[in-house]
Length: 297
Image (cartoon, rainbow, N blue to C red; front, top):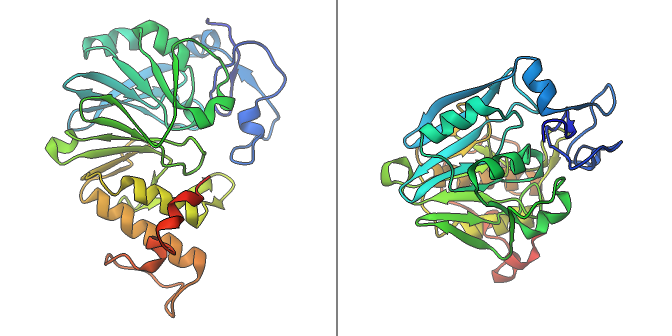
């Protein structure tokens, strides 16, 4: 549907004309300073947007757009043994990118971290006859309902051999990450979008309820995410933008990042406000006890 409206700010395609973009009006995003503006695939193609396809890591191919659309994120093609999975989404879509992805083996399944990255997911699903996995807690944000969308419930969902979606719940209640057991040459990889955002330092990740509006995530939500991630080993963490990758010891990077966030957020310890080197995880991450995991949102 080349003429369906696409929000120029977040890049999400809607099922029909409307005046507002609920995703941008939510406090986690924003309406552009010039007011609500719209585009379409037809207009993006006419203005010279083109796909960018480049390697991002072992068995991982990045997919972006030049000029960038929406907030500039790139998607990732995870080249798993059982078939490729497209992680996250971009807005631009044309015959060129379809041909290039098919040359790499196509797409068996699509999974998207959170509503800001829904883009033109239905176009992609139809082109590759692939299901789109979205956590049911984010059902209300789907702007173009379609039978290709699979709403799953619970804490984890297997979508292939060694491929597990985890409802971390950071940033959005349905915020999900993808764990690839065989990624990073057998050491494991985590695809986090900006549910756990790889920051420019690239040795750390961030946990925010809103990134553009700088609203920090709640400690209980972070503790729940850590509890769910604990059984999974991973060496790399792939964030949402080009080259935003933690290249080694990714699981430890997530743990120490949570330690730092919680120490600052809770203002605990005599050295609050200082820099925290890697080390053992203290009580702020563990939380008050077994009941802490149930306090998620």
